[in-house]
Length: 129
Image (cartoon, rainbow, N blue to C red; front, side):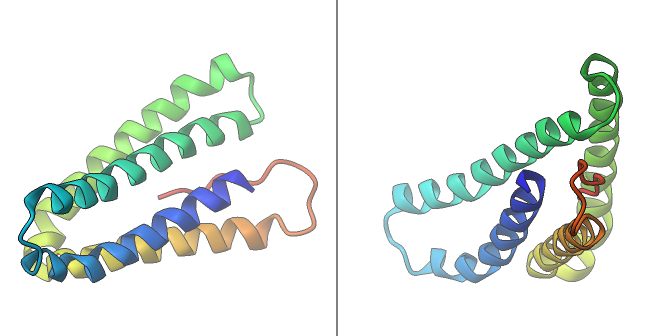
């Protein structure tokens, strides 16, 4: 449930960012604008860290064995995502479409987690973006 909530929250924040972005041109006070955009980067970072912790606890292995494998997967996924987004997608489609792609991938992962674990009492499978 916690992993599903974190994925859904990340999708919502990813959808919210492109909607708020145009308003920065209308705000004359830089401090509130910086605070809002700081929070829009800080909150997803916290959610991603929370997903890592939650996913590590959901693995069937012993936590001491699961943590390094999960951390390696997290680093590899982060590196590939940054490379693909910044080098390929951001220049081609822009920040708004990139945010929609991130939101869509999180919605797909959350939906898959929900549907594949509906009615099961065991730990859910881990699918995270």
